[in-house]
Image (cartoon, rainbow, N blue to C red; front, side, top):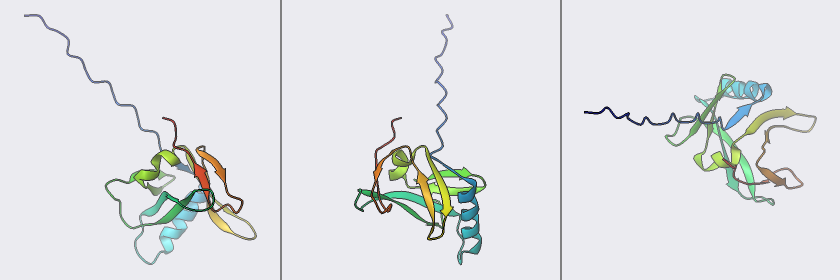
Length: 129
């Protein structure tokens, strides 16, 4: 009887982290979760159709983790990414910026093709993986 080597499965590639946070974004998320009236585990981030450029980012409180969420843990906070938005957000850096007129989360997204003049909507392409 000859021992034939058993082909082993290749190790799966590590999944890339969908998004990363700046220190300012992580600090702001910690502030929001600490002062919320109900328990919040992080922020849910997604993309929706609409606006003059075609799409816009969505950010809302996350009270639970859905089975299909892509969970990103960075700098001690959680971001839950809508599964339909993963390819549009791959490689994105989420920042929090304040100036004299506004304070907001800003997405530095390599998949962004263009943005409207008012800054409320963007045009995105899926990431090439």
